[in-house]
Length: 463
Image (cartoon, rainbow, N blue to C red; front, side, top):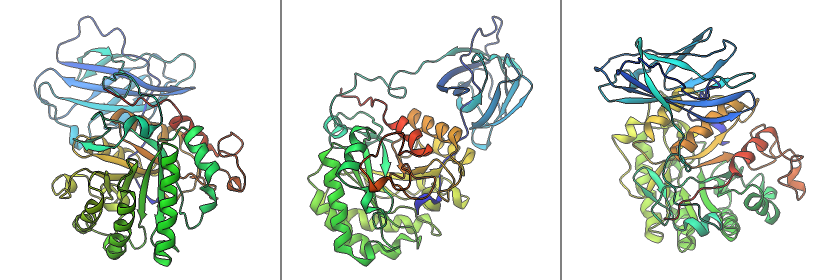
């Protein structure tokens, strides 16, 4: 199942810091550090650190700062190598941000733990030079000015989505972030997707998105093309009636080369695109997790399937899977550069990224941080546990991931809104035999965490 893969990493938030306070009065004008607490919870928090070099260019750097209490700990970090000795925290660069020219900056982040009062770091230095600094409070909406949130369902407010630059934008041409849930394989868990469960997802979970995972193999579409197409269309209608976006996921996993299913994909997408072309809430994901195959082969597949959709539906957003189980190639030892240097020849498209928080950490997160400035990304699937779909919830890594996605305004869908007997499922086994899909009694630890994140108020801009 999809769980296999990917993303970024979690490493991040950091230390329980609250603010960059009282920078030394005699600080040299060679560097600036801006510090922000992006998230905080009992005993922990996530911090963002922006370093700006105001002096001569450097080909390597060491950032240091002091915590007032050696009991405060950096748990995980990203975009740097983090270390702590007593109350002193040190961050050194990774390959891609090692050089900083005059005026250049780089963004770091970490997750930290603390007891008692949240500590305030002091004495930031870069290569031994004391830095000036400030506390940066980002405006609502992840750092972009927001004229004010619209009211109504996600589809009512945002209308037809489109890709603008590297962002997903709404009908007002303003960047938006969708937060939602993915089904499990509809061939196995169809009983989980009914009027009561979709009502709960829209009203109680306040989900913006339902991803419909239609496996092609594994007793899926290839066994009954007409029947599975009908099931997908039914769920598209159910999501739309409740004001949620519907992502049609052509869930290829085994075999990993999407070209194996090229003819099936053309047949399926020709049908669903023609049937749903007039609907504003439909998004197409044309290949779930390509694996064991080159980016060139994935690109070839995409450039044959996308025109089939466009012939019927010229306006919908289309999402292309990436190499290494949609890890932008990281799980195959590559990175986003192969896509940046050889993008799919089509417009209004995005690229998929997948991660499982307990398995995919620093190097995945660094890749997403870099790639987000060059490619439109959509996290069409992620899990709070390991890439197997099992194991223990990694709360710190999941929180770090979601905070990063919020900061970058990258949309996401969690795996899975189901009662599968695996720790990645949001619902306890047996839940889909009943009518309650929201209360604490039916939610797994993962489900409770994800529901608490996606049920917070959206800040969709309308002007």
